[in-house]
Length: 219
Ligand code: ADP
Ligand code: ADP
Image 1: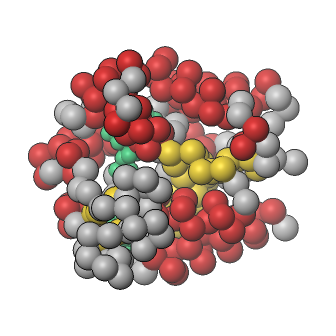
Image 2: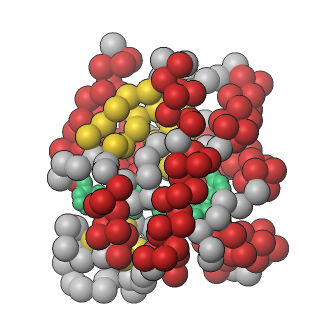
């Protein structure tokens, strides 16, 4: 049976980093809503142009547009074995829509690891974040540097810093998280799906704790 895992956590908690690692281990599609918006932005699609007006100011893209985009992805064959969702859902409306999408094909969320980090570490994490424009892999200049500065280890892409990682926009994104996304912690806790992960550990240890918790849940 296909497996669907939702990763929750503040901006900078390590969702993308972990999703790249554990989607491979678990053989799941990695669906990052932020990466899909950025890809559309790069290609100047209508969706990309619309998303940019929200992303630039650290606000959320409207639910209807975001839900339709994820529904389209989940219906593609690369999700046949399931998916690891990184950055979606981010509002209670999106969470309910995801439950409905999955239930239409008799599927459901397996678990929701919540990567918990205190807000104080996020500014340092996000201001040192460098991403690969082609594979989306994320580095940190101090905590997880590439072998060659500015170049992706995996595909030699030229790393860039995201426009929305400047301090003012990060603060806004953190506020938006507390207002709109944090209710999901309780929602998934009530549904007995939440797995709390200590996101302050080194990247490798977070991956191990994540994989252990997911596997223990299945046994
Ligand atoms: P998110 O997808 O939740 O916004 P990222 O995975 O992009 O977070 O991580 C944000 C930044 O923090 C990146 O530069 C990443 O290299 C770094 N990072 C991720 N996990 C850790 C960790 N456990 N310890 C230190 N830095 C981390
Ligand atoms: P981070 O990894 O730092 O949390 P993302 O890459 O997930 O950031 O998201 C970047 C931006 O893309 C968000 O600030 C928001 O504007 C938009 N976005 C991403 N996912 C969603 C979503 N599920 N709903 C609405 N907007 C989203």
